[in-house]
Image (cartoon, rainbow, N blue to C red; front, side, top):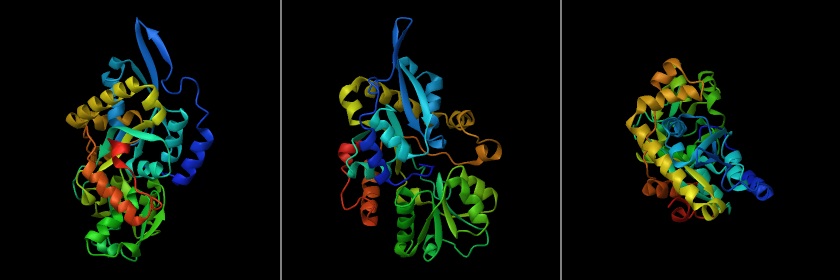
Length: 325
C-alpha cells in the first residue's frame, strides 16, 4: 500500500503469462520433517512497511511455527508484483490494499482474501495517512485542494479515491483536484520544494514531512470511514481449492498476530526496526494503524462505491462477498 503500484492492466497481463509457471510445490510450499513434526515453508509477498508489523511479530512469538508454518517474507514493490506472484505460485500468500484487490477481481484475476491486514486507526489528524501541506500554505481544509496539485503514490487507487471523498464531504468539487503520481519517500522533499501543493502520505513519509514543518489538513482514510479496512492478506483460488488446511492455519496464525499487535503496540512499533530503516524520532512519533482481526464489510462497501463513482473498475462491480468473506 505504501509503495508505488503499477496499473492492474499490467497485473492481468503478467498473471496470464505466469499462470503456468509455478513449481509443483507452489500451492503448499516446501515441506520438511523436523523432530517428527511437519513444517511447511510458506512464502508471503509483502511490502516492508508499518502495516505488516504483526506478521513479523507473530513469527517471532511462534504463532506460525506452532502451526507447522515456516514463514518466508519476500519484499516486493507493490501489488503489480505481489498479485501475479500469488496467482503464479511464486508466493502462497500476499499483502495488498483492498482497492487493488477489488480492481484485480473485476479484471478476472483469481484471488481470494483470507484474513484481515490493517485498518485506519480512525483518528482524524493522526491517522496512518494524511494530506500534508507546507506550513505557510493557503490550504486550510480539504475543500481548498480544489484546483491544486496533490501527490499520491499511485493513480486511480485507494489514495485518490479517499482524497476525493474528503474533498466532496468538505463541500469541494473533487473532479477539480489534480493528482500527480509519486513514490511516498519522495513526497516530503517535493512538498517542501513546492513541486506539489499538497501530498497524500502514508507513514513514515507523513511523520518525516511533519518534522519539516508540514501541516495535516485532511485524514482521508479516517474521514472516509473510521473503521476503513485498508489491506488484507490474500491467496489464489488454486491454493484455496488445493490446500484449505494451509489457508486455515495461516489465517489462524495471522489472526493471533493481529490480536497480539493490537494489545502490544510498543512491541509492534519496535518490530519495525528489524525489517525497515525506520528509527529514532520518526519511529517514536509515527502513527500506528489499527489491526482488527476482522475486515469491516461496511467500510469496504463504501470504498467500492467510491471506486465505482471514480470509474476505477472499468464499469464492473467488485463482488465483495466472494472476495472478502
